[in-house]
Image (cartoon, rainbow, N blue to C red; front, side):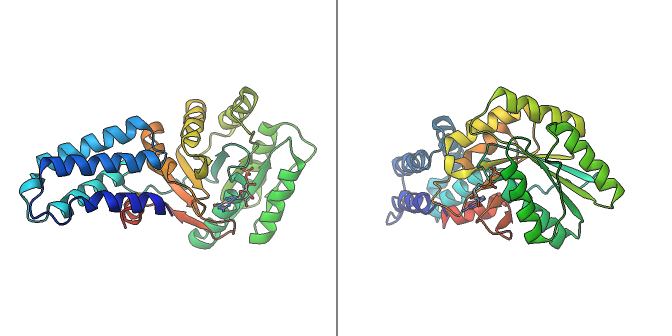
Length: 295
Ligand code: GDP
């Protein structure tokens, strides 16, 4: 994960090695390389620039130049800032409400259906919940089938109304069904489009308003880099979602989305998807991710 970024940051810190004492110029050179590494990873220019400015201020504030191990201290400052940038502390999922209602949003192909299954599986196995999956894609019968396949795979019931073309109705009926049948979590998988469009936004906003979810999650493909951040902004403007799910982190992603998304929408990344299988889900811990990036 993020091998290229890790390698580049490692190289940046090489500048500091082999110097008995480091100078302000060495620090500036290192930070220039850190910034370049972030830009190469598809981090937005302003975020990368602000990042290195903060690191420099902290480094000067902590008298990096006069400490015994200036290189180590600078790496620690970078790691702390990277953790902060990705969200600081890990944020769990809000499981209040009876049932807890979770709404999935995102573009088609982002991994919503797969993640809905993974989350249901996670809540069933790890949190002892009885989840119900809801197919709210009224445009693509294949999407409904796909959720049924996922449900069968993990042994979770799927609620669908293939003949009903009203997503709000389906979602509300599903919650009634859950209440009547002892389900304590309802995960609503919605329709996605290939790009943000008004019709989709209005539809999901209507579902959101009608079912007042305890958690609204935005699912995004991390491979899409800065586009991921722009899409997040568009969805957040409409839904004011609670958290981000970054999928496909197992692929050849450069890492920009993971690093920048929190600072753009000010919402935490809650989970990551690391594969196509139902158990390829991890809670997102910013500090562990920073550790991983800095090797
Ligand atoms: P949706 O249109 O948003 O519901 O997206 P899907 O759940 O159908 O996922 C689109 C494709 O991405 C499918 O082929 C999934 O198997 C794949 N996919 C989803 N999540 C991940 C992931 O974390 N890693 C990988 N490698 N593939 C994923």
